[in-house]
Image 1 (cartoon, rainbow, N blue to C red):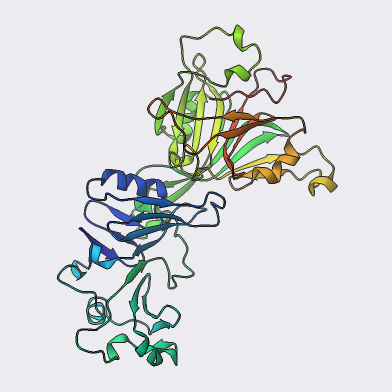
Image 2 (tube, rainbow, N blue to C red; image 1 turned 45 degrees about the vertical axis):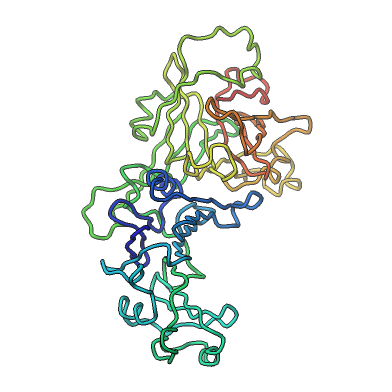
Length: 429
């Protein structure tokens, strides 16, 4: 049985690990992987059709814990303990819930002290006791309902008279940010979750009309200050990486990559012109994978300069889900269509983001005769892909990989080898 420390408005954990409000989904899953000997049952729930409207939920069913993530920023929003008898809980080092200690009204009062008046929910027959960043649900029998129904607020459960041994016990506990569970939002990324990495606040795609020149990264890093206020130790910096920059230039701008990956084959080469005439090189192009930025950068094997960028949106239901953090990109695209058709003025570009849906923007980008390329991913260890195929569309010097729910899974930005070549020639990594 897990034995965990509760920190209101912050975290749930022990000396080895902790779930922290604002923690990215990626880091939470890594904790669960490392603790697989003690945390054995993990289920992940998400919406295939509406991944931005429904919370991303990780349920630890054998431990009675539920981790609720904001679907947009994919950071931890609520820590819920829904089964109190499956976990030991303590506050300031003293247990208030264990095999020997029941989380009764008196025990909660003793452990956490005075609080604001509780609220009675007549529909669910629950009395909710709220602290800042922490709430407890007590189930109340219907015969006690008149005590709470008028008024809705009660001055404390401890003032009620219950039969011997029937004092209500906590049924659910929630840790969250702020004063209200119903209005809570995921806090900003905590400084304790940086671990020396850089994170992206925004990636602006630099384009000259409809030709990509490079990327402008607005990065958030851990500063060197010694301030006691953790958020003041965050630092924002701007960096630009362009096509034909060397690998040394990229490392100087973004730091060392999370991983370096060497390409072994290019399955999309068949869609390139004169593919059969190309001599197989002994060298291999290679990627710098920046997982916390949601970006891959491809370098030419011979010249060692940037030849391609890949931006990842990290939607659940995609083959690469949870390999990357979501890249918060903005891509301006000038549309050669009348203002009446697009609703945009001649000077106003269409902005594509990680939240744009392909079925809403494709009419501005594609010609009627254009057809997608079907991409089916698999690996050497797992030849099946339970998430199905994706579709790739070529637009200018970009390739949009789209999912069945019309969300964009990734965008590849490249420099055409021949500027005059058709825009639907699709190179892919």
